[in-house]
Amino acid sequence: MKTADSLNRSMNRAVQHYSSLFKLPSYEKMLLLQALMCLSGGSLSVIILFSHCEMLIGGLFLGISLFLVNFVADNIVSILILKHDSIYDLRRITGLSLFSWGFWLPFNFLGVAIATIFGLPWWIRLCLLGFSAVIILRSIVLLSTSPAHYGHVFAGSLLQPFFCVIPFLVFWLGVGYAITVFAGFFFIFSSALGVISSFVFVYVLNYAGQQTLRIPSIPLFKAFLLNWIMDLNVPFEEFLERLGENQNVEVSLLQFSSSKPKAIIAVPSIHPGPFKNIGSSLLPSMLKTALEKKLECVVCVPHGLFGHEFDLASQIQSQKVINRVAELANHEGYEVTATSFTKASNGLATVCCQIFGNIAFLSFTLAPKTTEDLPQELGMFAREECKKYGLDCCVVVNSHNSINGMINVEEALDALKTVLITCLKKAVSLKQFSFEVGAATIVPQEFGLRDGMGPGGIAAVVVRVGQQKTAYVVIDGNNMVSGLREHILSAMNSIGVDEGEVFTTDTHSVSAVILGNRGYYPIGEAIPHNTIIRYVRETILGAMSNLEPVKAACNSITIPAVKVIGEKQLEKLCLLIDNTLQKAKKAIIPILVTDGLLLMLILMFV
Image 1 (cartoon, rainbow, N blue to C red):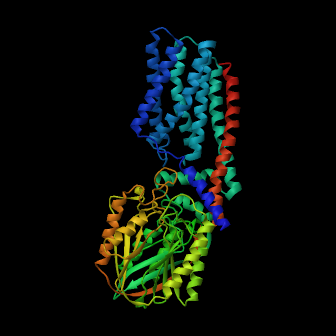
Image 2 (cartoon, rainbow, N blue to C red; image 1 turned 120 degrees about the horizontal axis):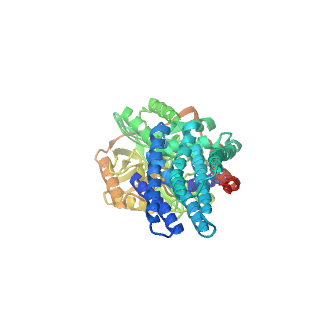
Image 3 (cartoon, one colour; image 1 turned 30 degrees about the horizontal axis):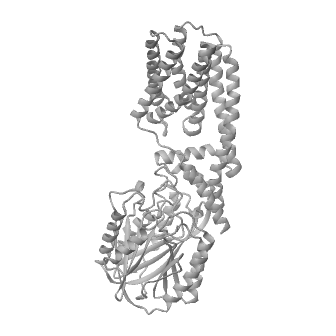
């Protein structure tokens, strides 16, 4: 548990950094902001330094010229220089130039302020220092993020600042300031310094990655950007494949069939992560789709008792699992009786159990407190307890159905084990009767990944034993807001369902698709609760409409040598983010200070 806590802390720190990402405004808004910055930067500088009214036109001309040459430079970079760059389209190039002006203008206005006291040369010196700062900024940003070749990267870094310095030079010459020959040397030196500084900065960051994972940080970051921006999964997965380790994984199937398959509850010993379309993030919906296509029945894939250390390294590994399970999933039923549904709770932990012949179906939740990933240790404990009662197979589900702050993991685990013993003892004492099963799936079309709803939608399996109807509802999402589970269970009662539980798949296909502290919406945070409940009711009613006598079967399928990321490597990958950021903060200050001192030394002669 200590290693699990350490991994969770590392994951939480990594997730916190995700909130620092941002999305750019629209292209039109950024153009407007550029125009405002250029006009204000040019006209205000002139108005402050030259009080006579006739210079107002010169200031406006300077501002308009700055905007126009910036616009031309951005389009040249987009159309000619970075035209094959998969990240930097015209909108992002415009955004980079907008940030460049955000760096340049403070130097410009500081120079204006000093020049009002010490003379015009100080405006020129500080403005040119800002020009150099922009070259360094653009070189570092493009070298760190663009997959383009070095020549294109540095051409894209230099073109905009060199275009934009031309209107300044023309204006300064127009007001009678003689630019010395040192200016030419300054432009060459500042360009070279920007390139060298960016290489030094990137080297420092790459070294942090080599120390932590033996892979450079910047290529890994570029691969992440290609996924975040372009949805390309292969570049990032190539790194995960290198870091991963081979492991045997299992998928437990609880199958119901009559003359043909009726419903399957598939519980993989795989975590559906790490995010978006990387690794096994889409596994729940992919496995559901593949099994439904082959067996023509309803399939649901709730979460097992595993954490991020069991993320698969790539979609190739996911497909390997899916192919194997689809090949062996057609298993005829043999158990014809079942107990009624039972649950036990001690105020913190809740365990649900239903036994089909010699098959135990168990689920764990801490709702309304947070129910996140639960350790494999709990599943092993549950299987050992089932063996004591002669149960041949045990399918264990982490309900993953409430998120509400932090919990004490050790305390929760002890509570779950205690309640499990009570619940299992109660369940095995119940008589078994013949049973019926109905199943249905609904995929709400108006909601998608950005709302927290995965492509698997909502599935329901209804079990009737005697007069008792039990509904197991599985929602393809990453957890749900606290309290929604209880509202859904209450709504079930209103349509004739006596007992039940609500699960989420913990799909990470919804993760890293929005910006925020978590990077995703749990079920019920973006989608109205009454809408979710309406869809759940419709799904359950659909399942109840096709109830029929079935047989149950349990099958555990082992897939050998599947590459998972692994706990140690995943923790290092998360720590790498912190280490790299710390290195970046330590490196950038001495680089900028050194560059600034060297540049100012030359500027004193300009």
